Length: 184
Image 1 (cartoon, helix red, strand yellow):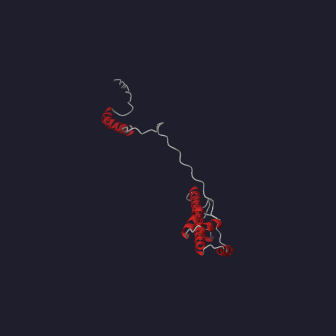
Image 2: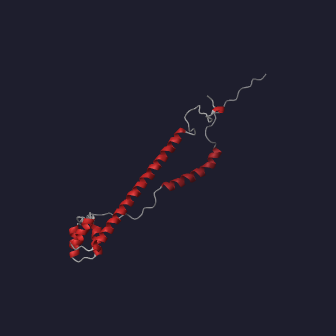
Image 3: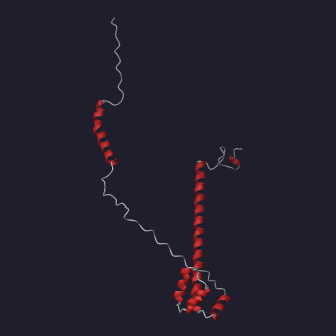
């Protein structure tokens, strides 16, 4: 009987075969060239102008000090200077001030020679300022309410997400709380 000799084992090659490497080489070269083209910087543009020592930017001129608020004595002075009602109201709008009009003050100013048209213009200006202030406060309040509602909604969403699909944390929760199907 003939003795069979086992064939020597050939070592297995790891990786891809030569046939696939030859086919994949052009694709890999093309892909690397494409990626290298994307990663390279673009063409250099013209140089940016630099501010040298000869171009010094002057600082902005300081703002003039604000005018003091308008008082009733200044309103009387403007009336004596023969300013129109529109000019006086425009001055009151620019300078502001607390030109409150209680009834006693209105009577006193009319006795001192202040025209009623000026008082009406200042009163309309004051009412407009009050309405604007009220509208601003209401808008701010509405924004605060909307912000709080959004925070509550996000918080409830986060809590629901943390709890998962079960609304109740009890693992033995029965969907039938009444008698015929009650578990306990």
